[in-house]
Length: 121
Image 1 (spheres, rainbow, N blue to C red):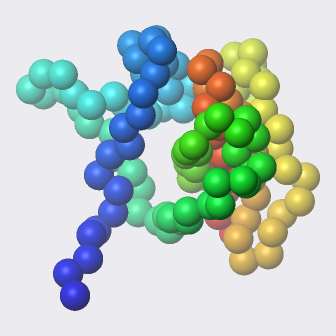
Image 2 (tube, rainbow, N blue to C red; image 1 turned 180 degrees about the vertical axis):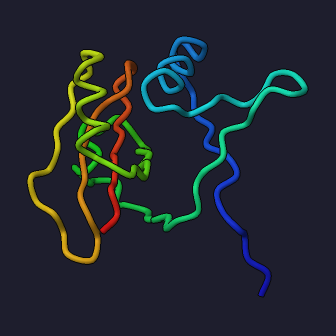
């Protein structure tokens, strides 16, 4: 069977796409889709990717009106959390480290979309 080789993009609606895109670029280092020849495209590092549909009633995303959540892998969760806090962004680091899985933290983008950061074990 032929399989997909990874996630090629993440597309979602935003109240202010330009401002939200700039926020992701400034605070998480996610480059936006290039608008002209020669602009760099964001490239992920190789690593595990979780793909999990959740029940409609899940409380895992927080706000029940949010239908998606992005999970970004990070090398150093503590450094990323410190960087975000310095920028005035509220982030909650889970104090538990999950064996064979790693560590997690939660934050929200300026439009209230949930983001999970994951430092794999």
